[in-house]
Length: 97
Image (cartoon, rainbow, N blue to C red):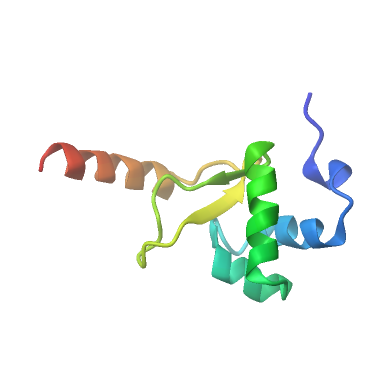
């Protein structure tokens, strides 16, 4: 059984980023939103996200936001219905072109 990130992550900056991703007000977060919430430099937030993407603690959304920005969430969070619908809509759009 996998341990939750709260028991694994000790670095304060990394905890801030993962806490921003765990915020129940958002299903997904942009790099800008996480940077704003944590008050960490964008490069540091990106470094932390990359680290935890490779450890499967963070996952990207298969669909970017309306401005084309990459979105992220914790892998422990269940995918919302809207995410599934966005993937289906994107697939249909690409295959019918």
